[in-house]
Length: 214
Ligand code: ADP
Ligand code: ADP
Ligand code: ZN
Image (cartoon, rainbow, N blue to C red; front, side):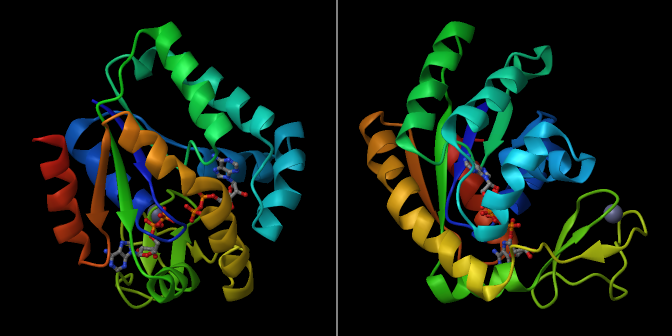
């Protein structure tokens, strides 16, 4: 299964990707996670990405396309993958098409998770992530049993610097301008499924699976 997860920031892409990974054992490729890892390691890539991420702007297309190309060429992607948060521009979508053509891979489905602006802001601002294993929680909708401590591994949870209300507003307007045109792009390719992400996490996952016919 070659799945692309689309949707505005905070819609629930990462949460649903984790469900799919558990069930189908295919790699989860999140450009946001890759950039955050590079920032943490202080690599050249991290330096390039940090300023953009802090302001809620997109990292330049050439940089982003480069890391995805490299990742998709690894052998673990041959039997499937979940691409989360890529593509986010038409240029990235065109590049993805040529990378997949070279690899002789056809996308199975493009799943777009939607939610209202107020929900997206509330979700991002309340998001907490485990420093150690990356598990995602929400202070209200998906809290850890013990505050600040990951249920899965006991690691400490933190709030992403770009999950402030102010930066979220920038990210949402970037989404409207640069990413929304991809809806039309994938509708034309007859790969597009829209899912109501304002439902509970389990209900959203039911719809994700329905869209994949599994
Ligand atoms: P994205 O990857 O699209 O930015 P996440 O999966 O990280 O989104 O989810 C954003 C926040 O909202 C997280 O704190 C997550 O726990 C929470 N969340 C995800 N899906 C739902 C849902 N269906 N209902 C309520 N909260 C959700
Ligand atoms: P969310 O889904 O909550 O918006 P991500 O973790 O996917 O968060 O992205 C965080 C940040 O990483 C984005 O605001 C952007 O700066 C950068 N980023 C992630 N994916 C891309 C991409 N495909 N193109 C450009 N920048 C990206
Ligand atoms: Zn953890």
